[in-house]
Amino acid sequence: MQRRPLGSSGLEVSSIGLGTWAMGGHVETWGYVDDRESIATIHQALDCGINLIDTAPIYGLGHSEEIVGKAIHARRDEVILATKCGLLFPKSKDEVPPRCLSRECILRGCEESLRRLRTDVIDLYQCHRPDPETPCQETMGALTTLLEQGKIRAIGLSNYSCEQIAAAQEFGPIVALQPPFSMLNLRAADDLVPFCIEHDIAVLPYSPLAKGLLTGKFSAESRFTDVRARDPEFIGERFRRNLHVVEQLVEIAAGYDKTVTQLVVNWTTTHVGITAPIIGAKRPSQVLEHAGGVGWTIKEDDRDRIETILRS
Ligand SMILES: NC(=O)c1ccc[n+]([C@@H]2O[C@H](COP(=O)([O-])OP(=O)(O)OC[C@H]3O[C@@H](n4cnc5c(N)ncnc54)[C@H](OP(=O)(O)O)[C@@H]3O)[C@@H](O)[C@H]2O)c1
Image (tube, rainbow, N blue to C red):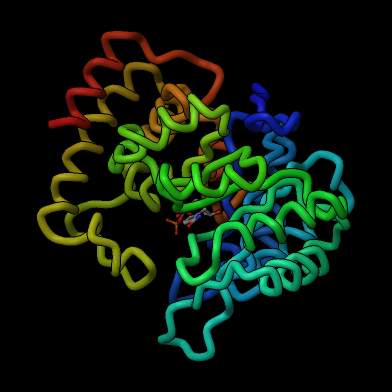
């Protein structure tokens, strides 16, 4: 699998990454997942040459990090390990995770992540969401302390605007951004992607399959009880429009003898300015399908057709 620079960090990542949110195993978020299958999925990713693995403390309140730690322990040198900081565990089921990017929250969070991940260094440590209550200088001060201590190798941001990234850059090196981006959500292409190209920041889009919508497995009759039940992309007219987009993409994929998932992966990894989409998977077969999405080329006229479909 092709490797690409992770911004200015000197690290290199595979052109697709593995997302482990669902492996947190929180039933109401992503339904039931089996830990053994999650570990097999991570091993499958490494066997396919995927080296970028993304997790976060909040995914299953530590469980995703623990599963990742267990899976990669004997293969640590094959992995660019990415996790996050800045979301505290909620005290009740209904509470939105509080944001905290204070020095204390970051230094403590890092120790806890290192322990759960069974490692002594995190390759990419990302602020999960901006924290409006903490001065950017304090957040970046804590992160640069971790860099100096050798506990992290590089700093990334997620869900930040261009202005917020620029503010953070005043106080330390930002090498990667993790924004939402998919064929059904192109907003980052307007401002964030050009900004990152200009500043040599890697772009690692999350939810590139639109939480599974772009795999073509849903229909107007599909009903959702997990995280998708609350996502506007899966509701009403928007959902019907999305299904129509996917139908047209299925036809294009068939011309290459590929699945629509593979067409989507290919399109995303070859989109200007994109370094590596973080693709969620729950089982090894899903990773294998993702891996078949790279290493071939979508013809120019099909790219134009896709562009027309997505912008209509
Ligand atoms: N920074 C942030 O704020 C943020 C936010 C969201 C996500 N993320 C990261 O990005 C990663 C990916 O995003 P995501 O999980 O939201 O969405 P995604 O990658 O768009 O979709 C992943 C889901 O689609 C389904 N799927 C995947 N491959 C499939 C295949 N080949 N065939 C059929 N179904 C397939 C699986 O769920 P089912 O099998 O249940 O359908 C899987 O959990 C996360 O795991 C996480 O690491 C970060």
